[in-house]
Structures are given as C-alpha cells and as structure tokens.
Image 1 (cartoon, rainbow, N blue to C red):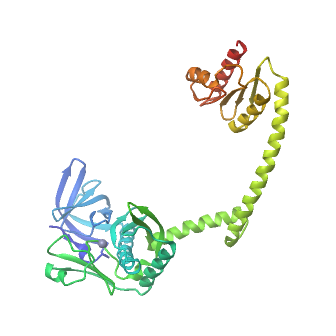
Image 2 (cartoon, helix red, strand yellow; image 1 turned 120 degrees about the horizontal axis):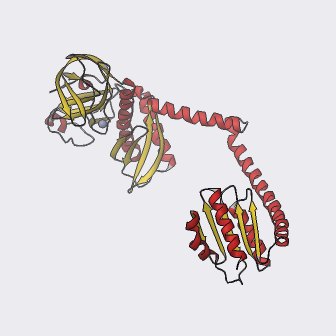
Image 3 (cartoon, rainbow, N blue to C red; image 1 turned 90 degrees about the vertical axis):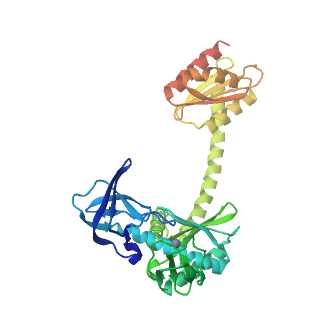
Length: 391
Ligand SMILES: [Zn+2]
C-alpha cells in the first residue's frame, strides 16, 4: 500500500522514495511508489501533476489503496526524486478549501445546502438547494465568506473511527465506515473529506462570487479563490484599461461615454438612412432609364442585401419590371419582380442555384442567393440575365 504523504501534510511538494512496481498498460507506463504526495482524482478534486526524476507525471489514479502514477517513460534507477507541480496543487487547495468555507457560510447565511461541487480548470462551482438567489443575498454571502477568511481560522484534518464520527456535527454522513477523514475549519464546520486543504482560511486570500445561474431547479454558483480571483481581477482591469484608452476617458467615465456614443450612433444611423433613401431615389431613376424592356440589371461593388432589397422594392413598386441586382463584395444576387409578369423568382432560383453552388430561395416576388465565390455569383447572374432577356 502506498504511504499517502498528502495526508501527513498537504505542503509536502518534494520527496525521495523508491519504486515498488512498474506496470506496462495499454494506455501507458505506470509507477507505484513507496510514498507519494501525488493526490489522485477524487472527491471532486482533480489529480496532481509533476515530475518523477524529471520525467513528467501525466495522470494519477488510485486503485485498491495503491496510487498509480502514469509517466511519459520509466526512470532508470529505483531510488527517485519526486516533485509536485506546486502551482497546480496549491490552486486546488485554495479552490477546495474555499468551497468548504463557502458551502458552510451559504448554509448559514442563505439556508441553502450544497448539493454538488465541481472544480474545473477555469472555474469552480457549487450547486445549492435554492430556486433563486437575488443579487443582494449573493453580495451578503460574499461579504460573510470573506469575513471568515480575514479571521484566519485554522483548517486541520485528522482520522476518526465511526463512533467518533457519530459524535461530530458532520456536514454529511460519510460513506466509509473506518478511518474517516475529517477536515475541520475551526469554529465553522466538520466535513468528511479526503482532499488537500490549506492550513488556515487566510491562505484563501479572497473568494470572489462571479455569477449564479439556474440549474435543474437549483442555483449554480460560480466562484474563484486566491490566485484565480487575482487573475480574474487582472483580466477585468486589462479590459477596463483598454476601454479607457479607446474612449479616452477615466475608468469611472467609460459608462457615460458609451451612453453618449450610443446616442451619436442613433443620430448617425438616422442621417445615414435619410441619405440612403435619397440615393435610392436617384439610383432608381437612373436604373429605370437604363432598362432593357422589362429587365433592370445592375452589379454593385459593395451594397448590402438589405440595401439592395430596399432599392429593388422601391423600383418594382412603381413600375412593372423585373429587377436583378448583385453585390460583388458579399457574392449575393437578388431578383425581384413587380407582380404581373407571372414569373416566379423563388422557383427559378431553386431550379438553377445548385448548378452554380449557390444557396438561397424566396417567394414568387423576391428571391435571394449567396455564393462562396464571386465567380459563381457572376456566372449565375449572367445566366439569369440571359434567361430573362429571352422571356
Ligand atoms: Zn472536500
């Protein structure tokens, strides 16, 4: 049986030991050690990573009380030096201890039991037995849990038997019956847990509650502790600084600037719409003058489908014509007819688009199509011109 050093202390990060077994499995090479501080997956906490004789440890699992270390390759000797990826381990300790504290205070402040805990690479969550959690309660919970961090309460762990466990006010009845490991936060709670924890709440630094969302009738609470919270703060600061530069305003003034900018945008949009309408009227006149029989055709260098639709609608409303327009920039073709010709735009597109690798369709009066390349769009446009001229 491997001696589990992480139960002696969660702070052992380098040690010397011996290899007791080497296993060659289908998915790779595994080592069993006399002593190990590598925490395997379990209790919601991901496994540790690190190095054995400078060979990367890729995964750590527990099988029948033995800890199996998946390694890139076997080391040469039997005596080995082990080293944890301490940043990863300490992060897990901060998030896991933070979860215990958060769950305990959440029960106290919100009366909500914790149903599950997830510790992911980017975020940690707990699901709590509440149908909702308003913002003011979330803020009260965040304040209360951080208050307990600043009180720097001791966190200890020890093993008890079933009888001793029964005498403790445990958060949940443990699944194991002997050697029950208790993680105690002084004056807060006793929790049956096999994970690795910091030694006092002060080491959590801060717990930041990020958001809540509904999850199958309960609430899912996203949080970050310690360095993760600091990192989150820095990301937010970077975004604010960039906005500050873009808007040429101090942080506190950014929101006001955005409101002003929105107003300007609205006004500009209104002005632009008026100019477009004027331009459309002029364009419609010009296109009508250039018409060949009932067909009006034109290729724009850059005009949105929406603008082409407005223009075509304007022309075909007033005169009994067929309007075929194309935009080079986004490879779009539009066909609109006034209504008395009996020609069905949508059906025509549907029948011929596939030959030109186009996608689209529409009604009898209006059809549009998009193409991956301008060559295809152009080919379809010319084919349609020819077809309509022969009508
Ligand atoms: Zn735990």
